[in-house]
Image 1 (cartoon, rainbow, N blue to C red):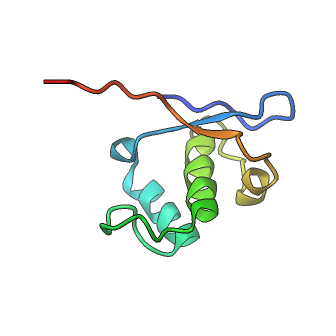
Image 2 (cartoon, rainbow, N blue to C red):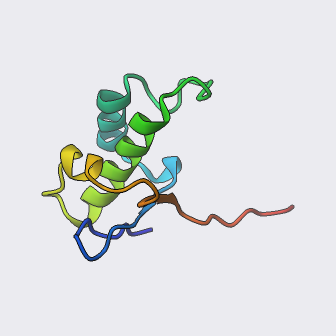
Length: 89
């Protein structure tokens, strides 16, 4: 999946699946949030930090010049989880 770029006229980022992340992206997630997204119980993760990390990682796939501060400046609701298809079988 490709994320939308972070521009003033386009303020929505559709977040990639954790399974689609590279090791470098997982490291960036860890740097921002403080632990890996695979550490188990995600119920105690600060939601703001998690959304910033996921938005940052996803946006950088389209525009490597995006910074964490660019993502922090986005309005709430600009970072959305992408629809995923679930196999009912």
